[in-house]
Image 1 (cartoon, rainbow, N blue to C red):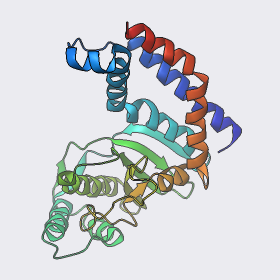
Image 2: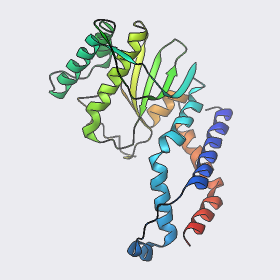
Image 3: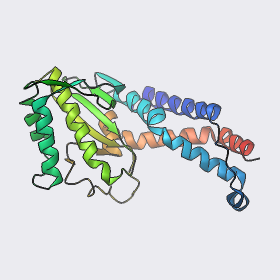
Image 4: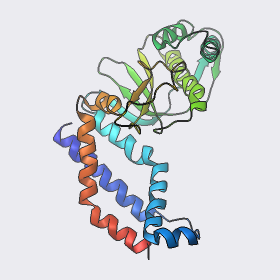
Length: 257
């Protein structure tokens, strides 16, 4: 991370927290037992954290990711439409891949899956499809396209099939526009909730190609900003937490009365 990027990231954090303080309206709820046991200020803090978590990705992780990616990528954008059409034959190939993975008849192999889709990306009738927007779109200097789906730290194992379909459909929609482009579609998990233990990836094994479709914690942030970015990013979060501590304490003292 350059000094400019550090300053940019820290300003994003300041603005995000202060904007949240200004706009946050706790939902009215009477919790007489909790209040007497823990105190209004602690309940206010709990409620605030829960609210912040619901949009942490869009309000903090996405803009921070864009700020970091400027050092390594030609272009970086958030919330981008990947495409609107997939060929009938590509849809068939995607379903065959999902079926094979679901029954363990095949193992995930993203490079092979991409090439199988590429071979039929314009074959058969083109079908209009409404796809989930990519949280992050990156364009590398060599023209490679990256579409990234940011997920919570502990995604529901029952959703992995849907994640996989989204990644394959993004690839198919991109190749329908440009059959020769190098496209990479990824799941990113911003931090490892199991630290210092390794991230528990076994639940994803069998559906996701862990080497080509998943980046967790330092893998993700260092991919965006270069080696060492993750640790510097944690320092920036800590610095802003210390800087704004009085503002944070005053806010919860006021709301805990």
